[in-house]
Picture 1 (cartoon, one colour):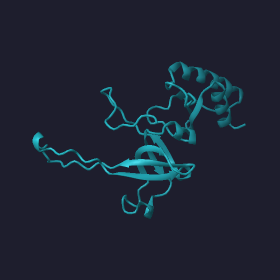
Picture 2 (picture 1 turned 30 degrees about the horizontal axis):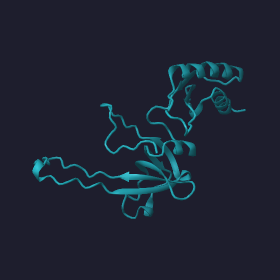
Picture 3 (picture 1 turned 90 degrees about the vertical axis):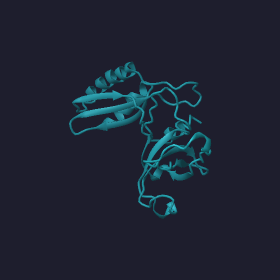
Length: 197
């Protein structure tokens, strides 16, 4: 059994989900854990320091028994820029803003709406129409004019909604996907932010 399988088996055996596993040249083993997702849950659970300590103690014991060579072990939660690795991660975060990097540039498929060499996109994650298909609702904001002064209230027109473009993709086309690290320090969700669907 490989060391990756040993770590995954231990983490899953303790009731957690293995989100990411990294081994550096300096001997650091970094393990990222989360609670398994259940669509029927009323409220999402978050990883605590006690959860990380529990997994760390068990992994230290198991890695010693299995004679896995490492210098330091770090166990942590996924954080606000959680990676999306499996189809279940995409299901879990439908309706959230995500950053997607494609394996290959979009090329002619962009139809001139986006640069043909573009690979990185940010948008709201949605299910596609075909099985196994996904899409991002991309919203391109118009750049603000640096010297523009706000118009008087009486002459304001209602703002026109930004044009929405849709990027369709399958998981095979994705090199990397993460939740977009959007932080709101005022305690309110940004206007137009999507919740879990």
